[in-house]
Length: 574
Image (tube, rainbow, N blue to C red; front, side, top):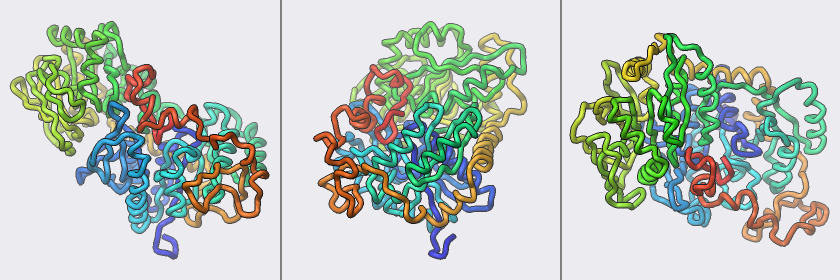
């Protein structure tokens, strides 16, 4: 710790969502802990349908749980004090300090509630700083979302409150990284810019020497250096936020080319229901040699599947309607009658039951389930948050529960607090497939029922694979970033005298004393007088389109990723 009795800190921001903030944060945490530094991750506000339950029964984002593992620290609600879980009707459930406190629209949230949470967020961060040598914070979306700056509690708002230096990550694989770095900095106010220490290039392919002239020019333009160029690394499969393509693309790609141990592969089809939550449940299956996992939304795609999984969802009744509209419900019923394996997890388990009574989540009242399992579900106002341990197929199983639905099991064979009828299985337990012995036993059962000569690998350890992935992230940081300079940032804060980049944020009459223009510089000199009348807050602003606590990506059926439950982070496209 520094002489003030307070650990150092760093905020990892991004030019966009999916720039790599989550994995860079995890990589820095792993690099530091391997150097003997007591480090913790932090994200003041997260928007995600992928969540985790801590040992004390608090719900946090899975990305922060993954980062805690990278830091070799026990996950805590302090690491993610505010979690937003998008649902229907353009609203999100607000989870505060690990417990749900209600549903809010974006207008209600950004209209006052978010500002009130800043003291809670900063208090949690200060507590972590007081007990750790370093805290690596992750931002959300982009810090240059100027329409939300006044109520920001996750990017520059928390950086300014805690006086944290900011490292901006850009995904060069997308293109336009120099413009993104410059534009992100130039849209910030003078005080915010004073904390932006520099940049980190992510996902670079090719010869770094060809990039270096551009980095030198960027430093000349901004007065800020680049702290590293991380190469593109495929197949990480690390829990990030909610982009399905992000969290699973690596794992799924790897599974498709890994040779099976037995004679056959095993094909797993996951129904890509709307508002899908914790799709990371299938990561452990995709890590098995010879297991091919794919996400499907058409009934014909179930035909050659050896196992069909109906995953969790934040909208059980809506997902049930979707299954029926798509014709998937009919195929699931046929599979059950034919004795072909189906696994329902959490909301998927609820849908496989006979009846759902929901006056809480969808307020739809009485709804008929698919009738594959003898289960009746009633939604309760309180949320079950638990870390159960049990036994199935003769193997020890650990999991975690996050659900409002209370299941009454009326028959069948007991299975992880759910039930099984024939080859239809249902449980509220997330994460059960990460238990290696149970996963192998379950896959042997599936292969037998499917008539496949598939043999699970005898030595696949999901926990060990995850550790290897985290070490790879630590290696990327250690080998391709200027770690000495990064440590100076963490310990000492942003360098003094960083130059202001015009034009700065447009003046906001609601924010007295911070117009975004340094004293002594005329407004005309930084281009403010030439700004459009809207001051940058036009209706077609990228963020405005996504401002309803998740916006189009979460709630518009026309959005391609809606069926995956992919939505937005801090309002920006995921």
